[in-house]
Length: 414
Ligand SMILES: [Zn+2]
Figure 1 (tube, protein in one colour):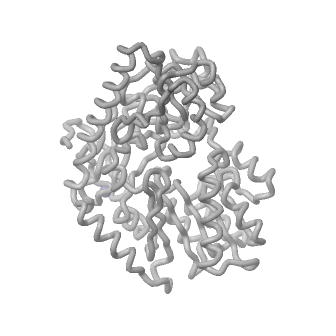
Figure 2 (cartoon, rainbow, N blue to C red; figure 1 turned 135 degrees about the horizontal axis):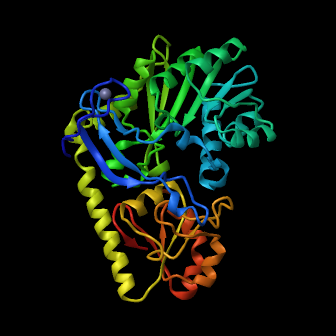
Figure 3 (cartoon, helix red, strand yellow; figure 1 turned 30 degrees about the vertical axis):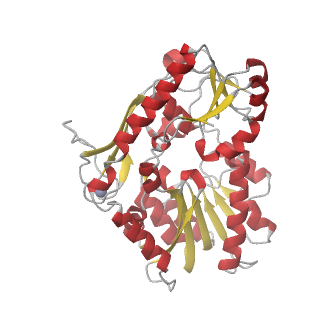
């Protein structure tokens, strides 16, 4: 960790103090979700990708180097394309319905409701739902599927408008969205407006403790502003008049937290597992700067082991491909400065990504069936968090003695 000597230091999005401590400096990279059409390589823009930790409130955040209109245009992610994520949504809906006794008189609101992948399960149980989703093309798919969806960015203003229209929520869900909104206090404030007095909001986000310990630096990208601990999330929510009363640890995204939140003066009692997780984070040093020093050396080790693997494969005349053209993999490839043809192709089952090029590394994205004629010796599984799901797809590799590879926290041939 180093002290930056720039003249105009960026400021913390929560407490407003200058951000002086670097958490991870990943160099200049293009937007990790922006695949290119062939021919667009020359006009690709790059932005510094630096995550810093606030020395006052310990919130880890990425510098705002990218204009917001660049980030939110042309967004082509559909939640329903990951089978694991669809199963996760079904289990969530069932658990919340039972725990909070939701029924036909309840209202469930999801923020960043995507294509309705989660709300469909509440709707199937005859529980009224409302989705709020800023990407019109994604919301259209939910609406076509019968999920009432408001096309809007969420915050205090949207929440007040919905409240005037008669909406008030028993349950609000926000999965993997808290980290994606730059004005996080206004965003959290919207929940305080829209929740009923005893209503509950749940937020899921990757746990920064797992990011540090597992060298998951590839989860850092420009569109992902915050990297949260429980302690930091509690500070954000407190600023909006909300209180965390429970937490669950999840395996999704390499280790996530699901926090349960209510209004400051609601009756929900604090659980012992919340106290335990706070204690775990304090023991790991996450309430002081020292707890954030461990990532930088782990990034260097992960990079070195992957570059060593690629050099050996090249020396032996072997070909290397990859699987999964998601943001994660793109950050990883760009930090390692790997390009086509070091990796001959990235296979991906999503048709909207196929026949494009990965950002920065400019590797062709091809349908998984192309693996059968390219017959690569190694296939690097870039979304390591769903490696099991992808290993099943890579089964044909054994026909030509190909091997699957995972590169985080260090490169391993499976
Ligand atoms: Zn701060």
